[in-house]
Length: 231
Length: 295
Image 1 (cartoon, rainbow over the protein chains, first blue to last red):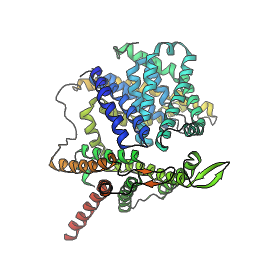
Image 2: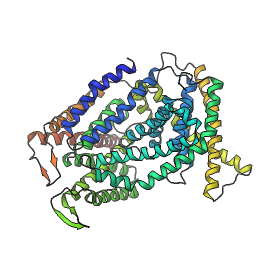
Image 3: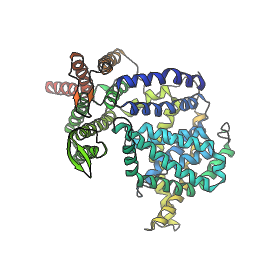
Image 4: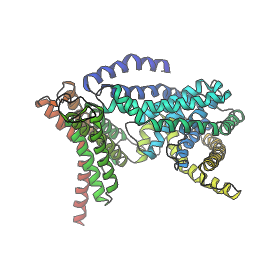
């Protein structure tokens, strides 16, 4: 079964089943249920593809090290609250190694850093958001590498996107249905954190994209890793 | 020690999903109360036995509950019984009660995640994942090993940097800058190491067929029995939910459908499910004291 078939099954069987089942069982929390399922189901085809594909042991270890760096970086910068290098490391990985490695590093960083900082119902949403941030960065890798301004803009976008997705989940889960005033109130309450995310992303990207990028470029050419990823 | 230490990890995963999914999305206090009770009883029993009840975390949960309860009416004005008016907006009784329920639900979910952590040994968790998704499982287990290693290496890198004159300035700009250098050095070191690890793995036959796991779990009759009990109890709860038996309206007035026989069955089935960890703990405690008294 390839990814196309899996995607078809997801679309025509699983999604209608989830939608109708959720509507029947959980009337008020319908939105929360749907959004949780969307977050999980988006990750599945990409992980499945990754599992199917031939990946060398050195490539696996590089992905593992990049994920560990973003988790360990949270400890390294723990003295500055809200300063997390997860987004930056994910984006840098995606810029030099490709979209799929970016998605894997982003989603696993969320899962694994929550082993240390606390798992909860928000974990799938963090995996989804960080995975997507990495995947999209991989798709526009070339311009991101060339223009510093674009990279900064992407850092700001990633911070805002991450924060808004998390607020969306809180709104769905706390309220009965979706209420715009509640969403706006939550987003406003989270505004300082959002700004912190955006600013720290830009700082990390500007400081680390050069040095870490060079190292990734080096192992890519020297050991011939991640050759099948389009660049 | 509970029954889950020797059981197939699938059984525990099923229990966790069957407890969490209905309670998280059904919004009925008839499910929230047993879920909270089950988790609190189990964690309290564990805490009392190991004499490590953390007052700080109890205080933290109480504060969380209080905050959610008090804040909800500020956002939601759906209720029909205003208690007071804050700048023209009603602060209603229904919204306050809904907030109290929401807080309890939030705490119940958090506590169940804590229960899960104490119920399964780490290697069991990876066993299940390792069969389904071997590469992701390998990534997860190596990351869990690399994180402490990288933290230790970061300390070494800092020491070396201090020795060549990069001091820890109290100025946050300098401190951030020097931490970035640490990150960069750490990356060089770790990526080089990753290539070596990859080569070593290849030399030892990673990726060949016929791989075995450190922990072998066989799905036995006891596992099948417990799993079918869990699924049967959940089927009753889901049937009740589908028939609208546990329906609970918070706004504009709090109205519950009068519980018929099915709703009572559904609540009891769910309560039994939630009490499984606590009951298995009790069973082990009784067995232990029984064996000890004979010696």
